[in-house]
Amino acid sequence: MNTLARNEFIVGPDEVVLVTGAAGFIGKRVVRSLLDHGVRRIRCFVRNSSPASKLEGLRSQVGATELDVFRGNLLWPDDCRTATKDVSVVVHLAAGRGEKSFPDAFMNSVVTTRNLLEACVQHGGIKRFVNVSSFAVYSNAHKPKGNLLDEACPMESRPEVRGDAYCFAKSWQDEVVMQYGHDQGVPYILIRPGVVYGPGNLTIHGRVGIDTFGIFLHLGGSNQIPFTYVDNCADAIALAALKPAIDGEIFNVVDDDLPSSREFLRGYKLNVRRFRSFYVPKVLSYMLCFLWEKYSVWSKGQLPPAFNRSRWNAAWRHTRYSNAKLKNLLQWQPAVSTREGLQRYFEAAKAVRRDA
Image (cartoon, rainbow, N blue to C red; front, side, top):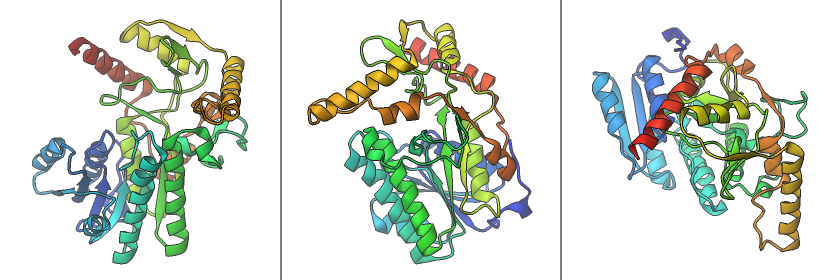
């Protein structure tokens, strides 16, 4: 657990921190981390349909702490204005992650973020807006330091070309936050986690491979997977909300000792279940994406461009990752090692299969 002294906080004991998406996979752990850091007034924004039992449980555990559960819809400006009233710091986790269509993803990531920012501007007095973004926004091409992906790497210039609604929405979301920072003077931080994993998110990530054609196609090979265990990620987000003198910064969140795609897949088969997989060499996977992309153009979209060179670059290009900036400026250290995190992940995945 990374801790800060009270006098290092940018919020005082009577100031309110708003956490959107507070009942989600990462959100409820961010609330827990903020409490562990000594934050005493937290407003948890959850959807009307979201179960908030675990948040209510936290409230009973911490006794006198003021932890409010606010139910609403970020698409409604009135809800945003009410939720941000008297708030000093916003930690914005809510996003349209499951949407497949571009309009839905845009509405639930970009429009909602603009509504929140506009509400913060109307109230005034916001000390920091922490936007939780994603590695999905990086093009992973033309990196200035060879194979190393860090915060200096370019974003996807045409996110719509990748055919990924989540990438499209998160890229625009970051742009909106930076625009409000520049035009309206909103102090902001961009946090970009890699692959957040742990109990509660047990799918095999697409950076490892895809199970689309009846057999698992292993595409990652020797590539590192930019894993961050969910508790480590939550602690990084909490530190970004509290640490002074870091406004305008971007932080990538990945753990130490990252496994390769091949090592992860081997561990999954050994600890969870065995299944058939076929390794696709990088040259071949790139050519398949290139041909799929060209045929999609030739057929005028009859075959959607689900696989293309932009997606290949983002997910399967040989890449290394750095968390140096996170450690240097936030004094963050992953409390859960990759070895322990993967063990917890494998045990949880095996338990789910056993109980199914």
